[in-house]
Length: 110
Length: 120
Image 1 (tube, chains in turn purple, cyan):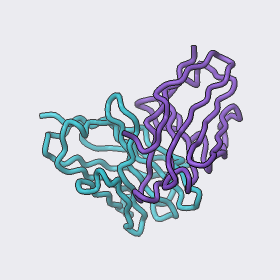
Image 2 (cartoon, chains in turn green, cyan):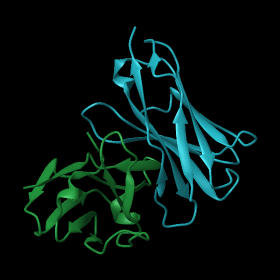
Image 3 (cartoon, chains in turn purple, cyan):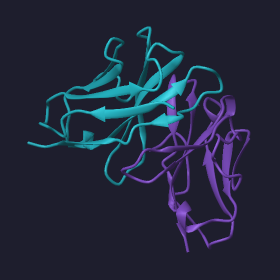
């Protein structure tokens, strides 16, 4: 059972928008910044979003993040087949004094 | 550009100790960063194991804290994780990662991962 809650799967047709939610509590998302990671199992996870909504250099602006209260959201616009992967949210948890991640969301491009 | 490479035995016996090393290049291990470990069991999500600062300060996942030790070897530019009393549930791909100290923080560089199987 992950501390942060994500839907196990989302799907979107090519060119459409995919939205992945991440729900936490006041000890984690509510009081800290959220980052998002894209992961193909067996490969190195990739940082997509940091500080709630900042994109590292080289990440397309199709990927955007937001945070409100104890929840965060990753939006992927203009979904491409190459976006099929697992997506994780993560943040620091003040109560646990450690990093916590969501259970991961598998994006399927229809 | 930081590069991280995990290494270690791919097979560990039950009740034994899992030991992995992450070799760091492209950045000094003495720099203002935390050096972290994650794992992903088959069919499950990523799990944070813990992290170490070059001073030796550590943070551990409370669920693993009693069995985990993370250490740093500055002379060899590497850091390591040891997980004791392993069971089949510790079978996973293990990743090392780099986290800047500056707030807000995140994990910006990751290794490719190494599979460790716990089996007799």
